Image 1 (cartoon, helix red, strand yellow):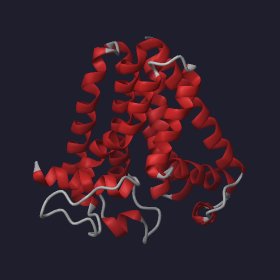
Image 2: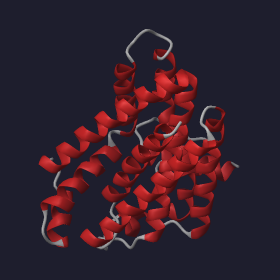
Image 3: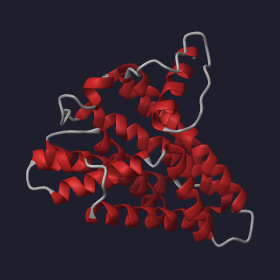
Length: 260
């Protein structure tokens, strides 16, 4: 449990801007993360970084604010806590995949800090859609039920990051996998267990049929994004992993609302 706490702290530091103090004597905030092992804690980190947004959604859901306004506030807080890390990845992927004609050119575009038309459109559509879906969750399941579901979504979508990280080859020799290691199979299994555990509470509000559809759509979205990355640039980058989280989270939210 101490090792898991250390791994979770390391993941929170890497994937967010939340200040995390040293937890134990073996926890080194300055250490370079080794994702061969600590990737198992990425879903737990996703749960933690989503807590401020979920708390705001719960409190605001008890007011008379319009649901859509709350949806945008919650979406904005999710991005703020992570420094818009995954949103930026999605924008870079959209620019690179659809703005370049060769793998080399696509990777070059993805490294460019400037945003293009494809990236701007992708982020505008996904942010608006996410806010609308969160608003629909609030209307259908109430403040507590909807925010419980959202926490599960943010956790499980990060387990799908680990899945594609293991499954895909690195697109750049000097990229994320080379610098921080690629998760092993044990880390993948533990990450899925953590993501599944985070969804159990959501079953209080979410019908089993809706959960099954949401899981199916999220897995399909993650797999489809991974296949597209393999076709466009030959594998994964950090931006691709961020895009997988964003797309699979949206797909999960769609599934929760499609038939419930």
